[in-house]
Image 1 (cartoon, rainbow, N blue to C red):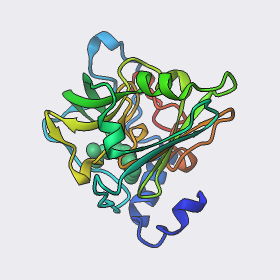
Image 2 (image 1 turned 90 degrees about the vertical axis):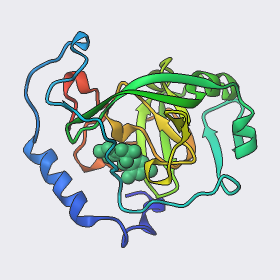
Image 3 (image 1 turned 90 degrees about the horizontal axis):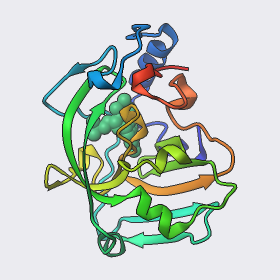
Image 4 (image 1 turned 45 degrees about the horizontal axis):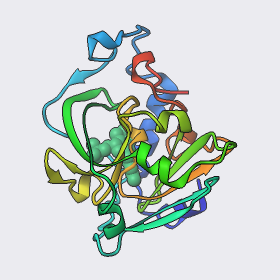
Length: 221
Ligand SMILES: Nc1nc2c(c(=O)[nH]1)N[C@H]1C(S)=C(S)[C@@H](COP(=O)(O)O)O[C@H]1N2
Ligand SMILES: [Mo]
């Protein structure tokens, strides 16, 4: 548990965390099959048309005026964007599918925001940077590889289906990493840290897989 998490310890859904750790230990939902991306639906998943809410039980109420994004660590140009700075960046849109490790998938989500590619062009990661950690307003963290973050469909999203992302789904701004299970898509993102060494995040230290590719069923470690 990171230092930031400690303040939220008493509030987070301990029972939920315990049951998810148990799922990880038991390998729940693992089919042992390998899906082909042509199938669209990864192995062990089913399609839903609603959009479930999953988090630690804290849904921070971050107003745009209070929101900021810090990007730091191994970058040539660290930054801190206010909402207005963020909104002034080139607009990016992408349609992608959500795959949650709890087995639901939701197709054709239209996201709008700022692309990871643009962010990378602005901050210029050092040659030694290999990993990225997202830090959120609720104390959540999750880690991804820098080359995964650099994929063309990754963004910092402020809108879904043409509407601002709601508080419960991580507004004002959340990360979208479409090629990985949805726990990698940090809600209420506050800080993006670039590092040389990997730093497993909240679920990654609790039995979830470090990379989380749904096509190879990277559910648990
Ligand atoms: N900040 C933050 N981001 C988070 C989480 C969280 O608890 N806090 N939960 C993750 C998990 S486990 C999932 S499945 C998705 C759920 O996103 P949704 O509630 O919009 O469906 O958010 C991910 N991002
Ligand atoms: Mo999840």
